[in-house]
Amino acid sequence: MDTSISDSSSVALDQSVKPPGFTRYQSFVVAILAFLQFTVILDFMIMSPLGAAMLPALNITTGQFGVAVSVYAFSAGISSLLAAGFADRFDRKKLLLFFYGGFVLGTLFCGLATSYHFLLFARLVTGVFGGVIGSVVFAITTDLFEFHQRGRVMGFIQTAFAASQILGLPAGLYLSNRWDWHAPFLMIVGVSLLAGVVIVKYLKPITAHLAAPAEHTAIMHLKNTVTNSRYIQAFLTTALLSIGGFMLMPFGSTFTVNNLGIGMDKLPMIYLVTGIATIIIGPLVGRASDRLGKFNVFVFGTVVSMIMVLIYTNLGITPLAVVIGINVLMFVGIFSRMIPSQALMSAIPSLASRGSFMSISSSLQQISGGIASVVAGLIVMQDASGKLLYFDRIGYVMVCTSLITVVMMYFINKKIKQD
Image 1: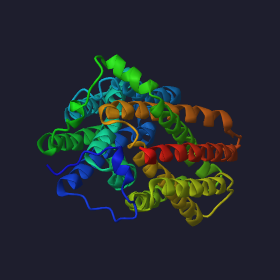
Image 2 (image 1 turned 180 degrees about the vertical axis):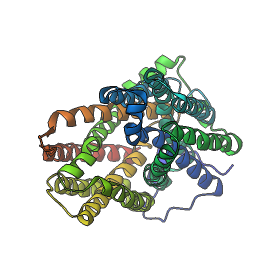
Image 3 (image 1 turned 90 degrees about the horizontal axis):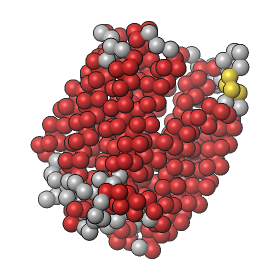
């Protein structure tokens, strides 16, 4: 079996040594997990651009549409927390297929929805199952790859976000314009079913964690994970990273159009170029994390992020080329924080509690992202012309949270090295 089960002792490996390449089976695992993440992220992201078509078709208000979008995030956060107690009691392959099957079913319901309340139910189902998938993916990654390989793995898997942006969204919008808003969801169901078949046929059982001693009940397993002093600092760091990272997202397009003077018709070009750059950046950052040290790359990414966010949030009318360049550099910083931080966090949980740890982390990411959106909405105001006021304050908040996370990650990295 061309897989390897890792533990914290692998952290002691000399990172100056060139990391070995993946086996054929490991390359397959990375590819199928990245594609799976692509379908889940696309399902979440497709709601926003389909809003213009869904509002009149379902005769709903913008407030109702906002609820339909947010119900996914909150149901995903709650389900991830509830699933934490059971996450280490089953073969991870079976757990992945169970939640992926529920996700596909929920997406099918979205594609068949003809009323607002049915759509709301469909998004709830999709969130309940889709919200757990990310944590299972990262638990599998931790089980099958050594610590010195995980930067590259995270780098490839994170390209799913960029791929959904430059491949999935245009395809989804084309299908929506060609038929109606149901079509993109049915497209996601189709490609997800293909991915599911490949997982069933070729992904090997992942059961090494089942040999480790386990608590008698799922509730005790959840309680012991949540109260583990070693894990609490990691959970707090994850929450803070998510709050800082998600504050810019809700108002990004509005700021670009109304404050930077970029026309709506130019937004696809920004997304396209940024997406292509991100696909290239992700694997490079992952490789650098494994070679140069994950904490070192995290610090680099934090510094770049702070500089670019301060520049971006204080811009006025700006040429398109400059906006694209700033966005690309900002994503260099964001990915240089995200990828090494995830790789570092993967070394914290023990084999017996990886699934539970990842589920709680995923829940915190979802909930913290929602909190970040609310906080950003309280800070930012819009004048009569549509221009956003106080947007620079979001940049200052993000800089403060970034500085705190560097300190927190320093101690996490130090603790990992001592193990």
